[in-house]
Length: 323
Ligand code: ACO
Picture 1 (cartoon, helix red, strand yellow):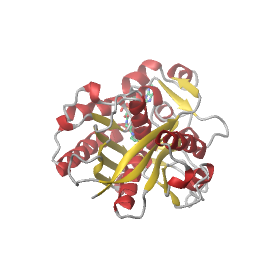
Picture 2 (cartoon, rainbow, N blue to C red):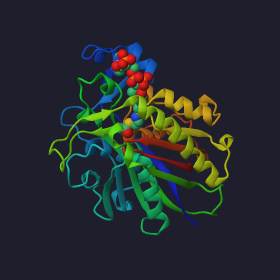
Picture 3 (cartoon, rainbow, N blue to C red):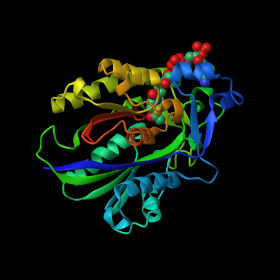
Picture 4 (cartoon, rainbow, N blue to C red):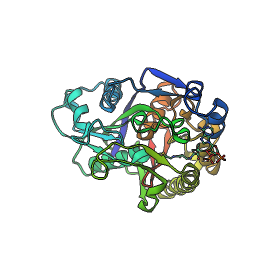
């Protein structure tokens, strides 16, 4: 059967690092509170004039370089983002242009922090259907632009960054031993809009708006939804928690990550954690964490990866992938 194999990864983080101590000079918070409640110690923030498309282009270029590909090899650019450069055109089209790609198609996908899982599942289905051979799947965000920097309940959590993968067709046997995306599971429940949203937009206020979050409520939903969607992926494949080599979760909060890891009875050493140094980069967080673990040698060819995320909408999802 046609499978979609991750053949390369890449990522990019803006140069500027903002520590908790620096934030504590601007809002009433402390390094102790931020570390205890979220696990975050520092985050990267884009420079003035540095756009989501710039971050996405650098991450995608790194993935293409790793795979030894050129612009002509790519027939889909799929960018998950909640912070596009402009209302339209799609930021993916700008990334396509920046990379010198003139064939195929490009579009943005919006599922906030679950964006990369949605994009991975979408590209996988295009590949399985025979419509795409080789896709760049990217998560990129400049959340610093939609943060109310006077709101201490949110400004300490979110950050900027980008991660990308090359997803490529491969003929495989159709078993759990195959390389590639083995299963993916997506969900949304729009009734929870008011718990996590941005209070602006082209159709409603004609402004960009700022992120608003009822953190405690989101936390409870995240723990429950992630446990159930991770269970769905295991059930669909017949794999057991001990078959997972690496849990690569959305990096929103160390306590949520620990709770999902505990439910799976995962050895904490098998859980990739970057929230401490990256903060919550929304759709960029999973591919960023994946690239970190590939480049430092933890994730190896043939490893079983469990990716999961939860975000505004609410949206949530998981994917089981043999790397
Ligand atoms: N510094 C110091 N004190 C603070 C800060 C801060 N930065 N922020 C809030 N507090 C205070 C609150 O005012 C509150 O004070 P009170 O008890 O006097 O009212 C107290 O700390 C506790 O606040 P809680 O909100 O109950 O703290 P909690 O333990 O829930 O942690 C957090 C907050 C980190 C936001 C947590 O709830 C969380 O991580 N939620 C989930 C976030 C998430 O997963 N988002 C998902 C995806 S994001 C996306 O899709 C864009």
